[in-house]
Length: 392
Ligand code: OSB
Ligand code: MG
Image (cartoon, rainbow, N blue to C red):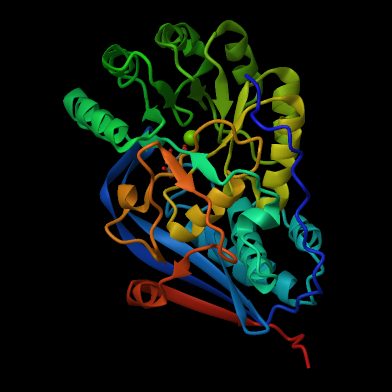
């Protein structure tokens, strides 16, 4: 598989003046999901959205920490991210003016792990810079696409009929790729049925680490269904067993959970753990890391696509910007706001066209208005941190 564009992405241009961040705010907002979302590690019916904003010189930048309430997808939670931002990352960001994204990410690198917490602040910082320099996020990160292809990630359903209904209706909406969540007992039979009804569609599966290498003979059965990929079949921090599995499977393995940063991406490609990488800005620790993984994969012709974490519109706007980079040649998990929530925190909401694409907005920063009234009405907690190095 080849990546689509010949254009080399530009490095993030943050050569504006040093920015003295005056205030950081973190807040949690409860949004109900329109329908429960079930994966191999559990089911949720609402999302505790974790928003962060940073302020300087009268401009506010917005980011989202994609951690869940429980440590199931990863060890991070809303609670650990609050702690790490409050006690370590916010003080590091406020301690002196920030020169550029590399400066910020270097300060954060002295604290181990907690990528989602770090990413939330990086996102807010990049949105702040974009607004201050009157550029869109996509321009800031060197995006080249004006529309991005998108797919939908379908949770485990109560029964096969319900699954087939959902697949049909998302295909009617135009989504370019259907991803089915699988787990032992909800895998080959349902994939076979979906494939039989839709022989030509881009179809993938995501196991969220539900299998062991000892189950390789069973996993190999999935080779019969012309899947675009199988996402993260094995343990969340494994590379070795995935390499063994990839060597005996025809279906490309795509790693999600295992790719926690650029070094892991390099190692995975070196030993053949996967042929495709899902990039989530939160999982890898922010734009600084996501761009490096993108550039590495782009230079090697390895396809990447943008994963999702059931974000609100704020995280989704950042995902759209990232997915506008030239290496993102497969449809992302960037569905319409209405696929998740009755009402989103941005306006206009993210919509998907009949051709299964989302427009990359042109306006400054996120390119969407942040609906502060709606956010305030649904806010559960707020904490603010003030800088000491005010501009005079
Ligand atoms: O593994 O990609 C995943 C949601 C929460 C946690 C992990 C994953 C997902 C999704 C949903 O698949 C993607 C989305 O539509 O946001
Ligand atoms: Mg996944």
